[in-house]
Image (cartoon, rainbow, N blue to C red; front, side, top):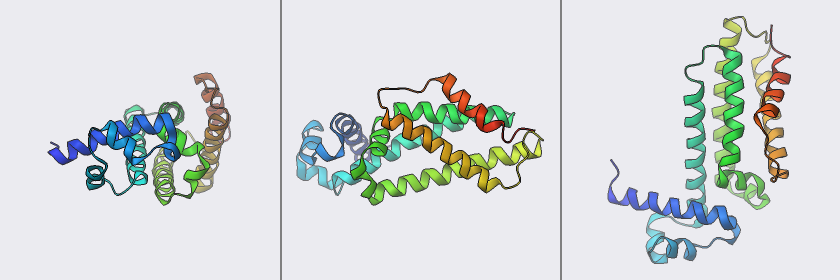
Length: 193
């Protein structure tokens, strides 16, 4: 159960998420977040040291939401090929939905923020663990023939980053399930037995 302070922080983050998604990090101010949260700017600083910390917390929450969705979507799937397909589909679909994270990937300025670099590194670690687990199980169950798992993980990660880049640079174009499945099939044919 959340105490009063945690509830207030949660409320601030919900308000900030809406503001960041509308204006981005650069154009959002602590004043705007404080005003929309019905508090003074000085009070806001009792909860967060700066808007970058608020932004990081919002991104962290969005990434956690995506990770939870991925974990729930793949947990009961016993076929490694299907688990990989669902992983890729849910990951890319969530990226479309996560407004702040999506804008973080799109905004060049954010590349410089240590917090964004950390969230990207953390997500890469998470993704590596998921893919490693799927590939190892696929090898054990004779679905996949992989000589070097770390290299295949790198290839899949690069392919997914390429899909992200496509989505980011063509923000008016959404990737549909058929396109996601086509990419997944293309990647799988290189590792299926």
